[in-house]
Length: 187
Image (cartoon, rainbow, N blue to C red; front, side, top):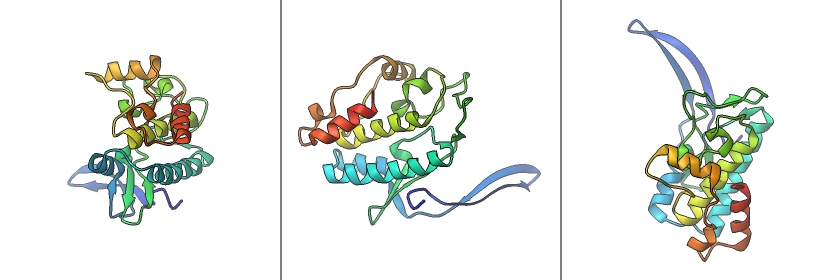
């Protein structure tokens, strides 16, 4: 899919007596969505819609192929000079099944964007990626993550128990429709 970084090859090879696993991916001259947010702060309604649609299309394709990304965050979204968004780093992705679950010994994914079910160590499915997309959209709209605390456990608990402030409270220029979509994704 045009919005997913192409993987050309995977393999392993012996290098200096050590087995090295590798992935060969397309080179994308771009900045991360995180860099863009850090530089611009709040993005325009138009840009939020454009990037979110592209990310959603990438996720739809991955989900149709039975793949759950499990680590959607602005750092894993590349934006090229033409505004093309590409989802990358399927490093903790898993094939979707009834057994798709986070490891109980550690929380996988980035805690600022983690879905409540992933934070609880429960079954992770397509909805988990959509929740994370909502957190990414929240940050595009406000320049801030929906939840923040002093440590990762506190942030994870907030994802499980709390409802974020409506992004429109932090960005009055955000459209009512985008505000609704973001809050719906974060339910």
